[in-house]
Image 1 (cartoon, rainbow, N blue to C red):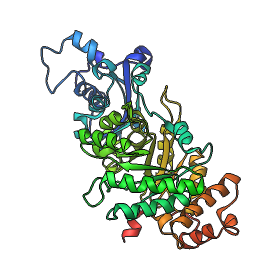
Image 2 (cartoon, rainbow, N blue to C red; image 1 turned 30 degrees about the vertical axis):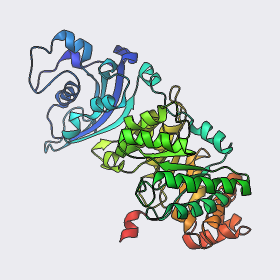
Image 3 (tube, helix red, strand yellow; image 1 turned 45 degrees about the vertical axis):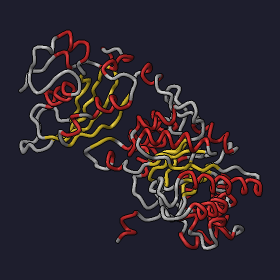
Image 4 (cartoon, one colour; image 1 turned 120 degrees about the horizontal axis):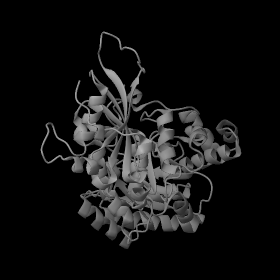
Length: 436
């Protein structure tokens, strides 16, 4: 048994909550001393190294050492464990001094999941920031209420349409698609995450064609639509592109959050010259949360940390489409985006990928009205084109708002009827079934 340091252990009620970041981990490991393993975790992430050093004094520990607040085993053995040994499943509750970290996301992540990310089956399940640290993050500039005000949509879900094909189209083609999508009722038009700034379809040209198309559509329909142009790039280049995009008339911005990093996104969302809505995309996020025993929970990756970074809307996998995410996990992400969190505004959740009008009712039952309904193929793939595709989504949304089934509404709405006939009124399959 290893020696335990009393300074590395505490009760939650015995620490100053305003001075610590709290974290919950699950750990699966073969160990005969769970307490020593938990202590090693907080020591590694704060003051210590693999051996004792003279400079790690009591004064240093009292100032900066992390604390184990609880170690729990599942099952909760009390008298003895099975003699065959094997992996133990532990839940470890710890506290890190906020003064070690400062009010920044990179060092927060380094403390929460730095070197220990390489020790084995360890997953960060949740994080709780002290009020003073939370107050230092601006969060979303517009959030749910601000985006609703921009679009003049006070109560129902927002319809987001993605350009398809994902990449390869020319700016003029995107302009034509944009006009049809906007006429069909798409309120947020989104670049695909793969469409950054290629020579055949540069950002500046896309803005010119798409925004002009949206102006024409507004004159025809009286409704406003916005275009989230993808400015993903190296941080410095991303900021240059974002400023140029807004100067050239871009009505919104989009960024691949997990390839540029939360801190770069925070630069984008907190820049006082960039006041348009910002939409985040989850490409690469699966590397952080997909493994059941490694990484971070999806509710942190897609939810709480994305909200700290300041996006106003975020697309992420839905339980009903082509990319699998458990229903309760997708709902938990939405809760992290919309539940009260200090002064931070709510973020529009956008469970998407493989969505079609037949998934709208279930989506609204699970996520409510503060929802971005995101679709690409479900709009463009409609038998009568993307104007009809957008209208079919709105018809499904309107029916769900009234408590009417999509099948019933389809009796008087041909666009919805054709969508249901093509894709059904049930959940879609996963991407894996599509690839078989």
